Image (tube, rainbow, N blue to C red; front, side, top):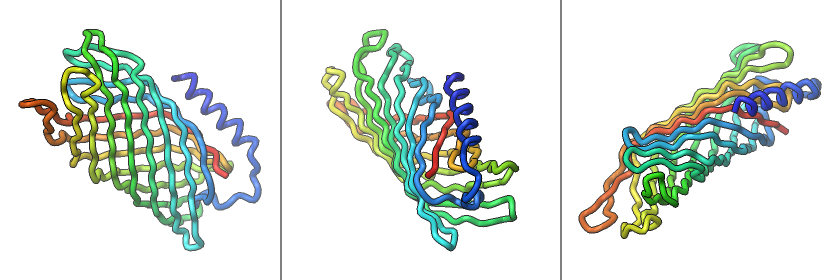
Length: 264
């Protein structure tokens, strides 16, 4: 993980040094066009006092931004992330290399406000969708069978980016975001266990999320650390066998890492 972070930082420094310094748009304003990049992260998903998944992830990100003369912008962005995670549960044992995928798609609208010659604020609001697939099939260290899990979140991102010129064509661009949870659904494919249970689909109504980025921008490049956090409350109980029900447990997810993007 440390080697990947160091390599990301060195690559960004090399590329920004080589980038052209003329003919660039105002670095304080949201930039029109495409962005592509990659990220590495540490990940932890936990159902308190029951189970957790931890490990490292790698992913790709992409976005396209539309801008207008009145400094209103629209952005469509997405990411796909994968990790082979370690599973640990009280009473059911452990397993390793659990395939875990996350895919996200978002659309936001915002506006740039020039506070001074060196500072700009860019608030935004939008709609987002998060999909997770975790394949826990197989057996844990205690012989307990696992199953596949699918998770869907719909949320409204509400945030603001602050851009500050720091000299030498560098811009410091931190972003803070609150993710208002609009609803979700959890699918648990218990038929994978072979124990006679039916699959379960439970609604998730309450939760919240937060995001933070500490990006540095220069020319076509941006890079820096980031954090995603989710806290989801317990869902409704659904039957899986005569006289037996299950629910989506309360859980939290923390993901943090570094990201490098190229803008064109």
